Image 1 (tube, each protein chain N blue to C red):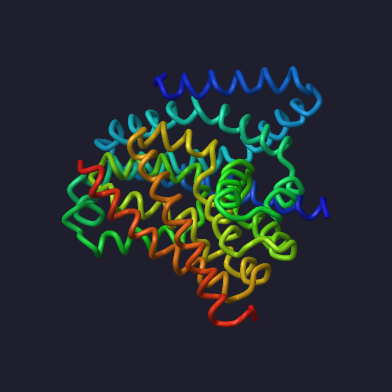
Image 2: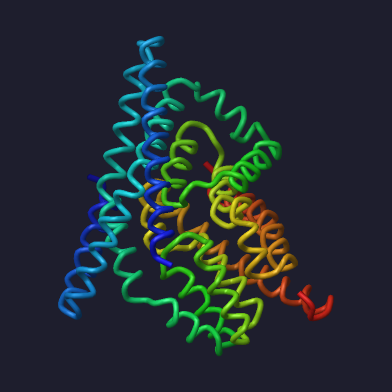
Length: 162
Length: 178
């Protein structure tokens, strides 16, 4: 068990204890919701874990870094950005995926761009966004998110040179 | 209201489980064809599973607590009338706190527009909702490390605020019609 996991669990226990003292009925409701969402997300988590395993086992590191690493240049960044914009994966699961890519040769920039477009841009949810907020705002938000995702990724690559 | 949502959920659950089965079968077949890859695949999958299973329950509990304590009405009430730095900070704070996928936030954003919140704050709220969730950040910390998380968080906040203001001006210049 890593240090991070210990800290997260201790913190959660403290919050839970505090919440329980404050309002045990609401806390039970929260726990029920937690159990439900845990089981709801579990299949997707397992799918991603298997795919990560296959990816790391079958695709050689040199191949991943050729497509998503530094030598891929701006093309790699663009691929990551488009992939993130189109895919519809819960952000919770995008982090282990991104971690796996990072470990096996992808660059910080591509990984950061992927996470940012994945979370901020929703091609699948775009119709709902247009309906609720209007075409102009929805398209501007998604389009500009794409641009700032690339900028954020490029700066991160500069800051965290690996 | 509730039944179709529940129906949708169990449908999604069924679809995910079926997909899991398919992936599992594909993985087993692949490993039977290439037995020499088995060790690498199993060990990295197991590694990720262990890392995930230690934090996933905690993340879910935190999300549940937020969901029960911070209601949608609270968010709309507080965000509808603030502006300036305070408004920006609140938009980020409330965006990061509650849970749920982005499409839950769109109707809230629409309600905020009707309440007269500024467009920049709504954009900032939506973006924070999308990519700065506190429980999710713990997963990021676990898998990508403190440096990566902190840098991404900081840059995201800066650029999201800039984007919010830019879009507000852009829509302001081109007239009020939306």
